[in-house]
Length: 364
Image (cartoon, rainbow, N blue to C red; front, top):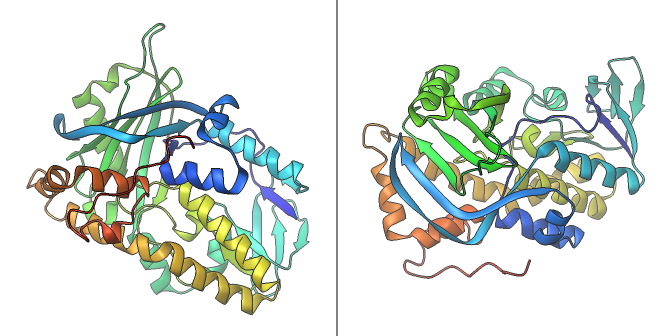
């Protein structure tokens, strides 16, 4: 196995770094690592059970989770899994971008001219994936991808020495028609950002981010880093590959269409890809079909439900001050929390009405 990355590790990575219950449970299942063990390794930097939801600067909902949100620094988190792959026997080529991929033959050419032949190529190269470009062909497919692509602006704010970060996850609606802003605690500060489904909202992301920062008072903090990057929010691909290429994570558009959560879907789709390879062997036709079936059965159906809730929430949301969200939270707060955490699927958010979701395992 050869792992190719255009960056050297450890490397900076813009990301809010949220691990929900389903992410922690998946890591425990695959690697036998609990949240406490991840924290002991320095991967989890903060956790909180508190959350608040705002319409601009007015709080419209909030509560205390049965199971906490955990937060990681992607610089440390990604490097840990990179080293784990090396220890498992992966050969690595870093600092080299992929220049071209032939999905029919499995040949990849790197920027420095090195050619690699693979029986299977797994594209895990993010929302700007070069691997996806080899698979996604035709104007219609490209247009569908771009129409559901969000743009984000994000920064890490350093706190004055001795000042503790806020002890809640904050979500802010109303600063952009199709999107939301966030403030999450991290080591020695906050990660704040905004996501904008700009082809629907038709507003500049940076201008909305500046309004959010000024109105909430975050503009007074010292910015450590700032950047922008694309984020899939409902443009998951079906089929998720072609020939000898299969796609996982952001490269396949696998992120929560409502809140943009991506870490879980990257891990889960990689697990499904590995299981499909083990069951189907390296025959490209059988593998592609097996992976597509498994992905539809285990992930895509739920993402379609989340996308439907997203569209309901945001249609006229700013004008109505997100009354739909407030109503959901007022009537079904624990079910909504459980759906976001992944303890119940969004498909069962309203059915059967009144059924209480199972509690998270406290000792994970």
